[in-house]
Image 1: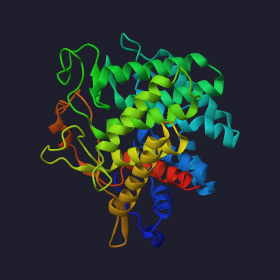
Image 2 (image 1 turned 135 degrees about the vertical axis):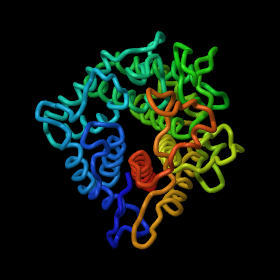
Image 3 (image 1 turned 60 degrees about the horizontal axis):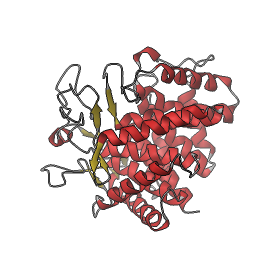
Image 4 (image 1 turned 90 degrees about the vertical axis):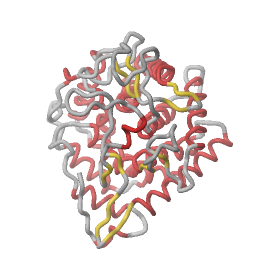
Amino acid sequence: MTLSVNPASAAAARPEAWFDAFCQAYRPYKGGAWCYEDGCIYRGLLLLFEASGDQRWLGHLTRLAGAQVGPEGELAGYDPDEFNIDNILAGRVLLPLARLTGEARYRKAADRLLDQLTRHPRITSGNYWHKKRYPHQVWLDGLYMALPFQVEYALASGNAGLVDDALRQFSRALALTEAGGGLYRHGYDDSCQQRWADPETGRSAAVWARAMGWLAMALVDVLALLPEDTTTQTLRTRLATMLGAILTHQQPSGLWLQVMDVPQLPGNYEESSASAMFAYALQRAGRLGLVEPALADQAAKAGRHALDALTSARLITTEGETHFTGICLVAGLGALSGPYRDGSPGYYLTEPVVEDDAKGVGPLMMAWAEGLLSQR
């Protein structure tokens, strides 16, 4: 999706004017159906509101998300029996909206999503399937889609078992997708039957930057909610190693390559959505001290460098129109129809590169919001 945003203020040095214009022009990503792409924008708006207190962000959020939530918590176009883990992500704004608006429909909608998770199919070691149509598979994307919502719901409802389950799922997923050196492969097939999966390990072949970005944001968001104790120490150690790897792979520009583990791959390029995700995760981990002080300081500086690079080099105004550029439209594993996505390093360079896609704009909003908090 491309939006032509052309208010006079959109070219301002600070990107809030462009975010505002983008949201004024925004139309639901999938024709109004509840989906994770809209959820990226919703999460960005919520964090901008929390960081700034500016009511315009809450106004956009209630207008956009509110249109998809019925009086009894019905979610537009949502079928829980699809068991699509992506559909959980947008639910992260439901409990905050219930609190901020006093409207019970938002809590009822969150209950519907939690009900999906209670019935969601799992691999043998306990992790959620990515989707019913992708059976026995765990993708790093799905950790961000489901587990922070699950922990937030658990804390709001006092259900400690949901927290324990989420932490176990993180630990297992990291073990199953580990690529070494703090990096993780995009996916894992528990059946080892998919063509993209190694027949012995079940792992996919490459380290896709946006999959790493989803993972980094998921870990940071969950650890920010939980106390530092024996139940979270292993994940904190994992996070520190991963952030160190992310720092090592940051390019001089401040951004990250689409395929992180094969930097010499011909055609490899610096990708904006993953870079925005890393900018957010690094700043947040640094600000909250989720890792030891020296690494926290490095992470915060690297995150700010990335955010500055994105807003100066990828948020581009040409002939009066501003666009956020360099975003990989989509990437996945396998296929039910169309070209087969084999998960090879080269595959990730074949997907379209677009501008103004929600999977990039939402994380850029998140990174900017975190930057506001980090400057206090």
